Length: 225
Image 1 (cartoon, helix red, strand yellow):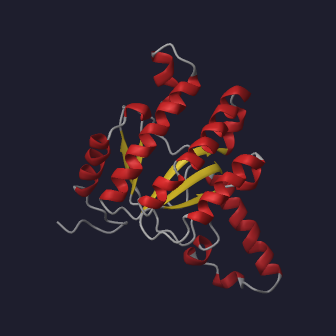
Image 2 (image 1 turned 60 degrees about the vertical axis):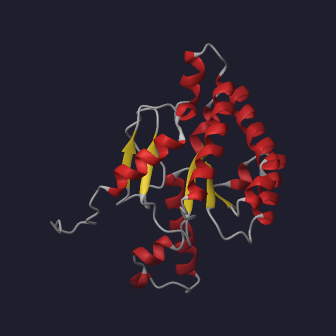
């Protein structure tokens, strides 16, 4: 969800106003996803690298997370959305973390769209965490090194239980993965748009999906045409 800061700068506003506008886009895309029966929507909300940003901006983002998690909880339930989160959640400020955990617990029985927030997340960190967990289980004798394959490795990732993403949308013209779902996106279709996230509309979202539907996904095989 890139471009919040640039959106604000273009309007002579502080960066936090761009993040506020970006939250409204999140609401739009979540509603659209639920309406067309998308199973899982993962949003890269805050990376492990984002702590390097100015403290005022980090604080504003964390306050937004707290406020919106609480204020949107009833609407998530009304729309049958189940909230989940992945990353080093314990590294978030305690009040923000508790609000998030409450929302996750409250929506756990919903069986519609899974809204998965990547918070304090990094793809390399996720892979290293998986390697460490596997190493511990090998040492305990619970995993044989000869049995380690892609399926077993994937079961140690934060996304265990979720399918690999079909489509990754990158706003604001960025053309890199930026440490997001590095293992899971091996065969994910990429869609890049110059539109800044606060300006990203439901129509833009559907345009990305329609283009995705025209692509042939070969997963390393030859074309069927």
